[in-house]
Length: 638
Ligand code: ADP
Image 1 (cartoon, protein in one colour):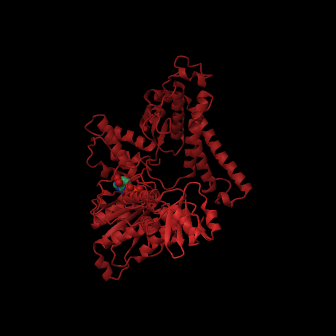
Image 2 (image 1 turned 45 degrees about the vertical axis):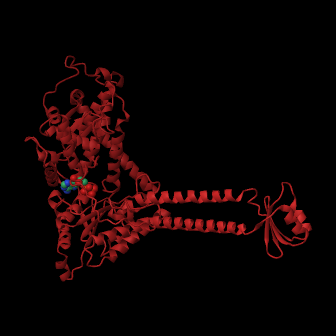
């Protein structure tokens, strides 16, 4: 019964604070530096080039015969042959330049006349000077435009960047004055009590300082998703009247080493400037995992980010009124350094709500929604065992949507019950078309579960049986305890196993064949049976923890045998129950096929009623020797 959806946006829409300074980013700095270097180099190169050309302007232009006669007279010290251009330096230092005729072989001639120093620059063969200059300028121009574009894109921090650098996306939202209060967070009284101290500290820091008390810097909220960790943190800020900055740990972990660390630095700097405030780091395990392991770049980055986080937390002095609240579902994977005194040294647990908690949460979220007077919160709370606060908020929201879609003035109980199913198993899939035969199999399968669940001693109530496809399931049977349980007896686990096997058992009894529909049941049953044997000491193998890596192959084989035995026994029990209840199975399944969904009360009325309505064979009572219907005949069942 894991939450399928997360609820809609929080009550108050977060405002962007104008005070936020843009986050510095090392990549941006490097880019600017490299860009500037290229520009400077370009300018220097261009000026050298131009200087070279202006120098060549000082060379005396003459004709080739003049140059050759100088050579003849041995007055030439050196020569440069650049394509058709020949430039010679006379013994007195004067330079003469001329254009030779095509095909004129000058090199040998010069050599024969004692010009020892002859240079032939290879690359500039044939390119006129002005063309080369234009090309160089064009190249630099293109480079310049590229750099300009890159920098502009970078500073705008817009979407669609190949590499998202530039301003940090770390601050997801921040509120200068959060409006959420403790009264908006229901059913978590202990957590509120513990956080009350933080509220006091943020409100009256002087009182604590005068007493010389060490002020808490970090609080770790531990609990499954949707239990209100973000909500209660916002409420702490709301109660204390301080700003609230929220980031997600995963946003710190970037592709490039050093980026996350710089984001952490910027975040804390910003927080200190806007103190008093709260920094909320969701999914802190994304950064705070234990260090060490494979030396990959990803790890380097995470380690640097984590180190920076530790440095920043240690760097708070007692006048910084900043409290960091981290949220996680996996405190066990966190680096021990994070949990040391002076860092996240307080842990506050947020559990899934109990019955009372659920009633209170439902009440909070029912505010402003027109509920019909017949709606019973108590009944809803009993049907939502195991749901988180977020799921409950979602149930009420879905019900309001349903009622609106059906053009009703008030939200009715059945809107709410329908939305519970939606939240548990996903919305109905009306488009999922089953054949008549499949519909019958689904009905009998679900009813098999329901009857076995109801017949096992000490079993929980069945809340709903439905043949409507939802999410991945073709049909569902919802069984939920009417009260919250912390301990489960072995007999209850055995009953659960039998209930899970009831679907397949019904298929086999009625159709003489089995389907793939039991895959999920088998998976769940096997997992329960394994835990019974390996963790709970509920098998003849004894009360020893049997983890995969701690047991030898012989014991492992015995574990498998015991697991198999438990599941086999459960199947036998289910079959036994359904064979005895065969008439009821047929009767109620046929009814279910007609109505698609029945609730627990109706199931009990039909199941525990004395007289049985025979649907299939009222006339031929004696003709009971073969009621087994094969898969092919299913179509005629109804
Ligand atoms: P988490 O951070 O633990 O994943 P959130 O604080 O984001 O959970 O909870 C999501 C939503 O669920 C909240 O905005 C609120 O509407 C609802 N919710 C969760 N817990 C509670 C609660 N204890 N009381 C009231 N509403 C709650």
